[in-house]
Length: 144
Image 1 (cartoon, rainbow, N blue to C red):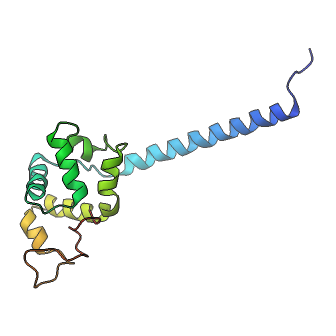
Image 2 (image 1 turned 135 degrees about the vertical axis):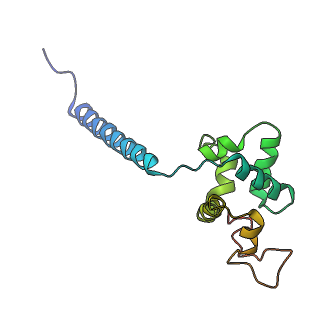
Image 3 (image 1 turned 90 degrees about the horizontal axis):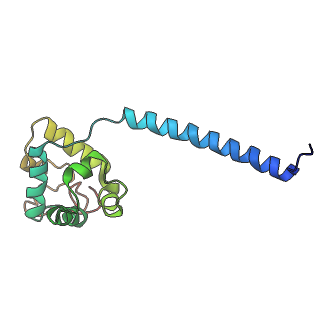
């Protein structure tokens, strides 16, 4: 029986096999990395604290937009914090720039600090400003 596959077809099949193997290797590594991430779910009390900040106008616009969508039933904070909503463009935009600051805030909440204490001790907050965060504050828009 004569082989109908040309050299080009055999090379393409080999390249495809190699690409599939590479993709499987990357997917396995991504799964390993995902398992290494710490649990990021917020408690009900922490969620309520965030909602209070948003409702008082003390949250960046992206977070306020997420709260609006949550209020309308489109999303929940549990979906957002568990990672189930990461495919949502609005969720990604709201949090991209401020992941390090959010980790810091969550750690402080986990340690039992109150939201007002966290705001008062913001290292980027100018001491003379009581009513307004300075542009470089980790609580400002773009830093969450």
